[in-house]
Image (cartoon, rainbow, N blue to C red):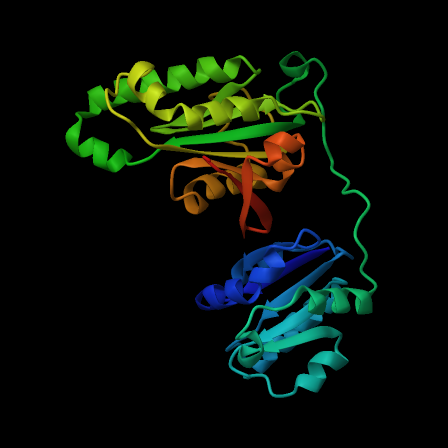
Amino acid sequence: MNIIIIYQKKNLPVLQKAFASIMKSKNISTAFVDHTEYRKIQTPDKSTIYYLDITGIKKAEVEKLVKKFNNNGHSFAIIDLKNSFTDIAWLFHNNACDYLNKDMLIKPLPEKRIQAIAKLKGITPKAQTVHNYIIAKDSWKGIVPDNEYTFCFLFIEILDIDELKKHIGSEHLNHKIFSFRRYVEELLYQVDGRCWMWMDATGLFLFPFNGTSLPAIYHAIRLVLNRIIISLEHTTFNQAIRYRIAMHIGNTIYQPRGKTGTIISDCINSLFHLGQKYTTNEGLFITEEVYNFLNQKTKKMFDKVKPFEGRQIHAFKYS
């Protein structure tokens, strides 16, 4: 089952601590979504409970929000850290399945509480998640522009670029970045990866997804583990550089490189958000979609970390 906490930004630290035990559960997938993004949630999911943070929201707005979730068929619960909504009975009369205030969140919530609520709502674990994968026959040979396909996306970005600009002339820096880019292109080409977009020190690579395996993950791991050697021996930086990598599986309309300006893709936007807003440090970060296709030995090389934009994230561990 899934728990999605729709939070007010200032309350995120408190809620992360409150749901800490739930986040570690192997039976529950937990995600945090900013309240400004909740309107994108449309399709009812019978295995998901949404916890709505109504702290400080006016009564009329809360009633409107509750009505929306009821109309969409979502199971929902309420978080009210300031006890600002006094008619708690009204919430339960309108299908709320839980109510949490600040006093109830001093200690992390026990998993048993969520399990009891799930039983009450008749929520049982899904046997299998259905994905809308669009597999191209013969990999790149079968991909036609203007059509939608499923890809594995790899985002890579050199860190500290602003600091490097202070000490290296723009022409020399561009040359150094190009040497890094060329190395990454040659490495990922070995597993059918192609550079789709490159902007300054940031690149996006595509791998046609075959529906069963992700050989690109091992090259991504090599990029992380061999960072210093790559920096000194395969680029012209002559110093150790830092970079971050994010990977995801999703669908997008394909256009050839250089003609991607008209593409509107939530999947691509989400990956750039993950790469640039979530991964503040160097390393390799993958979504649950990627993690699910790894073998058991490879899965042990990743730690489950805090979710981002409704997706569970896993980070590569160095030891």
